[in-house]
Length: 346
Image (tube, rainbow, N blue to C red):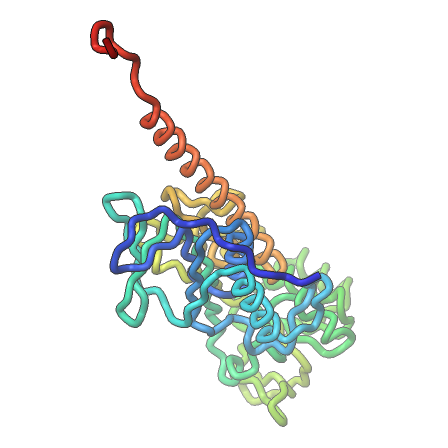
C-alpha cells in the first residue's frame, strides 16, 4: 500500500510576515517526532524544530522498543523524520530561544537564527540533561560502558562484572536491581551514606560485593572500561559501571510562559527536575503541552513516543473544540435576525 501524503486542512489564520502553524513542536526526539506525526496525520499544519543533538546519541542501539530492538538512535530518528515529512509536517533544524503568548492568544516562537513563527498550540519535547558524577574518565564512557538504566542496557552486560557507583541513598536499591542481570555486582560506596545493617544483610544475601572508599577515576583500555580506581591507587576490574545522574529537564524555554521545573522523586530519592503536566501532557498554561523526558525523567524511548502521541491527540481535540466554536459563531452570524413588523416588503 502506497503512503501518499494527504492534503492538509487549510489554516484559517490571517496571513502575515511570520508563518503561522496550528502546532509547533520543539524537540525532535521520539516524543517530538511521534507527536508531530500524529498531528500531521490529523491534517494539522505542523512545524517541528530540532537542534539535532539527541540525548541517546552515544548509545549503540535503542532497547525495549517493540519491533525496533537495537536500532541505532540516529536511524530511528531519521525514519521518524521521514514519516513526519511524508504526512506533510515541516521540519526545521535549529533551536528555539523563546516563546511568548500574544494578546490574540497565539504563541510567538523565536528561533535561534532570529526568525519567528506563530503557533496556536505548543508541544515541548526538549528532554533532559544528564548531570554525571564528577569522576575523571566517566563522561567519556557515558552511554557505552557507563550506564544508568538496567532495562535499557542490562541485557547487553548480562553475566559481566558490573559496578554500581553509589552517590546517594538509592544506591543499594540500584545494586540489587542490577543483580537481576549479573551475579558479579560490586557496589562502590564512593560518596554515598553508609548502608544500614538491613541493607548490608540484603546485599550479602544477594552476593553483592561492597567496596569502601571514594572512586577517583575510571580506567579505560581501547576506549572501553577496564577498571575502577580508588583513592590510594587500588584498581578493581569492571566491564560496566552503573551510575545515577541527576536528571535536569530542559525546560528553560517554558520559563517565559510562567512554567518552572519542579523536583521528581522515586522511592524517596530525588531524580531531578521536570515540568509538571497532566496525563495528556497538558501543562498549567493553556495551549502548552509537554511530553517525554522533560515531563517524566524515567521515561524510556518507547514511553516517550507514546507520550508524544497522547499529547498530540489532546492538542488535536483542543483544536477541534476551537474550530467548532468558530464554526458555530460563524453560522449564527450568517443567520438573519427576525423580521420586524412593518419593515418587510410591501
